[in-house]
Length: 223
Image 1 (tube, rainbow, N blue to C red):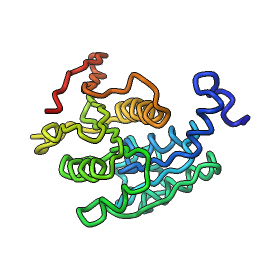
Image 2 (image 1 turned 90 degrees about the vertical axis):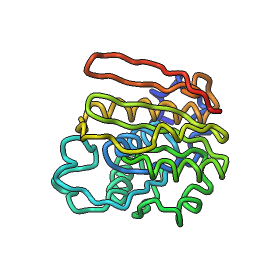
Image 3 (image 1 turned 180 degrees about the horizontal axis):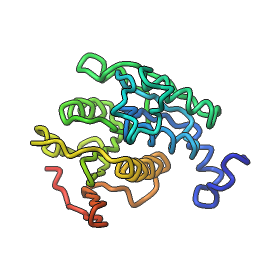
Image 4 (image 1 turned 135 degrees about the vertical axis):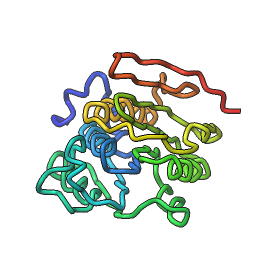
């Protein structure tokens, strides 16, 4: 337990063992996903499925944890698995080098305790949310744009597809510290979901404005 001794007492010994038995799917291994996988693996979530059909490019170097000059052109999930093997080989990372589609969404989500959304488009979020809902799996969603980010946790029966309809009218940019910050919130929410802890961001949308140093909560109606 020396690896996790600094998790205590914030996470108890029994909770640490519980985390080791849990399975999380991280959809997207880029700006958000790379940090999320890193944080979940370091805290001790035992099984992580890393899903992404993309490879690393020069434009990823400004913000993506797993993107280095040495990983350019390499599949993102494979790099995630190699990174975690170097950091914490007790964690099993299964790389899935595929984009999420209508054909594979259900099979990818099956068997997991939580789905973590680190995607970059609303259409795929809606598709993955539907698959998680059908499978009865909680869904931790995060998104970034410019200096802003948002996080929300959905349980089966919650419906906020309206948040993801359409695309931004113009590019806002993606900043490293915004990605790291939103990913940290998502990782915390994921651990709370897996441990059954209170205080999960459900029924409210957390909006992060890092330019003006503001966190705002927006109540949501799941009707």
